[in-house]
Image 1 (spheres, one colour):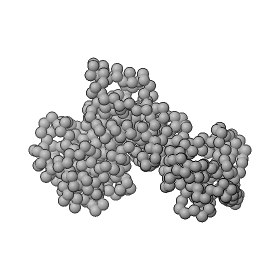
Image 2 (image 1 turned 45 degrees about the horizontal axis):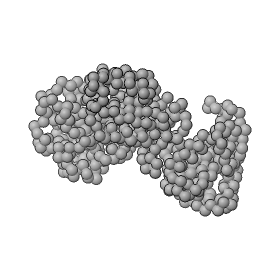
Image 3 (image 1 turned 60 degrees about the horizontal axis):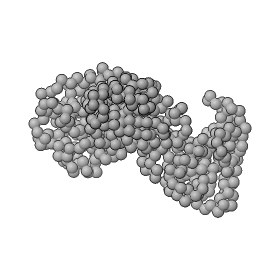
Image 4 (image 1 turned 90 degrees about the vertical axis):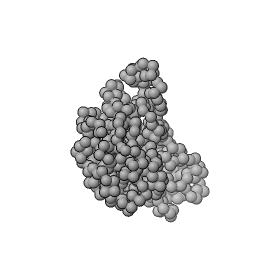
Length: 327
Length: 170
């Protein structure tokens, strides 16, 4: 049974994050970003990538700024790479796990925000299980605070999409010549939604989404993608295949028969590597469920760039943090 | 006002010769030449060749070390820093096109020290103009210049390299 999820959800969330073609104020979503700004972020990330290889892995760009991770939902990679990104820019950094904070004791979210503002913080990085949470917070904080969306419900995960396209560009510099497939739980995936927007803006000519009908959103074709229920057909000749995790925690009913069956139909098994293009790469935003959506052989194999995605996440987030902190 | 190609070339030859005698006098045999983006890199590469060293000069992009981020932000299209060898216990020849306020040099020295602990840092510039704001001066200079506050001097290049004095608004 399919949940009633409209792909048009995004349209209600008006983006207020672009100050000009060159500047960000908040980073909430990708869909309204101009192509030039996306390319600027990728170029700047390229320069930051070298910092992680220096003997002193730090530059003093955001010295004296205070950045707060405000996570209302579990996260390992995103939380730690944001923290490393902020620290490599020399910002002061706080991690607030909202599960254990004063909100548990009855404080409202807005009161928590007021308190953090009173501590003269400059930026909140927000992850929240509800779609639109980062946008809501951006409208309720004082003018001088930037909000970065680190994933809100099923809506968007724009920094993940940015690091994915950064990784893709390392292998395929010309976005206009590639075929990209996103496979799996498209319905519940904020990563998929942000990626589809990013790839469309970058004029990728062939964007495919692959999954069981129950996990493909109604009307997904309106986002400029082609949908496939047959994985072998869908990934044929693709240069980039992005595997997604089954988001069991967001499913309130049964979407697939069982995990074994799912692996047979949509798991990236070693023999499926023969179907993608010769130089094709396999990506996964993590966390990986081995044996469900991808085999260990593929995840650890030489076509997999999963760990590069993690490393690239630091440089890309450094670029987004510094562009959002611009005067 | 534009310098001619020959005038600029004469200044380049002057710093080349001064650098050669400086290295001899101080017994420096294998320095690392580092150019500051963008003009400094052209001059550093040129010096690297003239001194007979292999490969290209190291490059520094000081964008992430500037002191005016909270005023002007960061330029997204920055050329990368490339430091192919360790600076530990090495003599560094730091090359820039123009020494003006001294702030770029300050940032460049900070960045070099994030790569290690050099034995010494020598500053070579093509032009040293008035307006210094920090206790920084060049060890080797092609020319010292007095310019009005509303003027800038910049290097066009890389081939040929030509100095040009322009209005600040340009």
